[in-house]
Image (cartoon, rainbow, N blue to C red; front, side, top):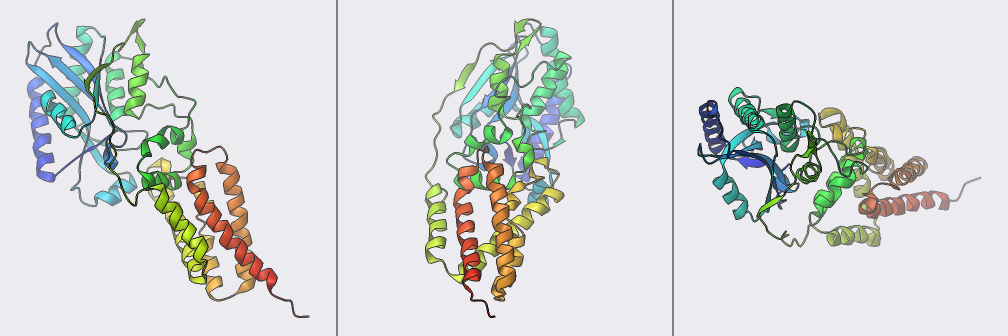
Length: 379
């Protein structure tokens, strides 16, 4: 799942070398000493490395082959990189690295690496080797990245299953958990990334997580997968072992979030109300836009707009015009929306992370409602 960014020249060079290596490897016949294995890399602290990484290693000392096939490369200098990523049109591709270079990079980044050797006959190792090289040489290794449906892990699963001639590797563990629940712990120590993904993801991530899309999930499933009544990858070998480290951030933590929302409630000024409603409303519009604009299905049908309600923009307008009748009506409408939202969230893992925003919204809306009720009626 981790994706390795490259500068443009480096990307082109690596892709060219990968292509040349793939072409030159087409005629290599692996020896009886050859091994094929799945590499699982630990998580990092960069946004593209939060979920770890999956790759395939082919080793044959007789033929001086020791290569790692990595389907997680992308070019950071791609024109319109951010819009393409948001749209779901960003192209990822595979590169092949020397094993020593691959391991050196992860050692430098202090990320753990583990290996599971596939217990398959030589002819299938040869077939996997050829499938990998054909993929690189033909351009099949280019694919449009999808967060759950198409990434470095799913590409590895598809290639191995293709080689085995059947859908052998499937999700074996945690299938009763939702994608949201599975993903949530990966954002520990990255608070605002956790908050951001919690509120921008829609209903798709609340489905049971039956697809293999995370490196650790693949590692767990491989350990209990059988092929022709034998364990496919019974042993897990540790190549690099590092204790996870998380750099301290004075702002990216729950405390700044709680302090900020608490200050909003304590200061409790009219301009704060207007600013809060306006920002929440614009965020809701953004979520709706992304749900229709993006090909990432994870962003569609986002019920978080019940909290980040675009109707808050209309409320802000009437509130700024001091129209108490419509301010009251819209405050009641948004309060009902939040009530529905809380009911939906009762069994969701991100309930508590959005709770401060819920409380702040409810507090401001109730104040508006009470102000309307406090106005004496003229007979």
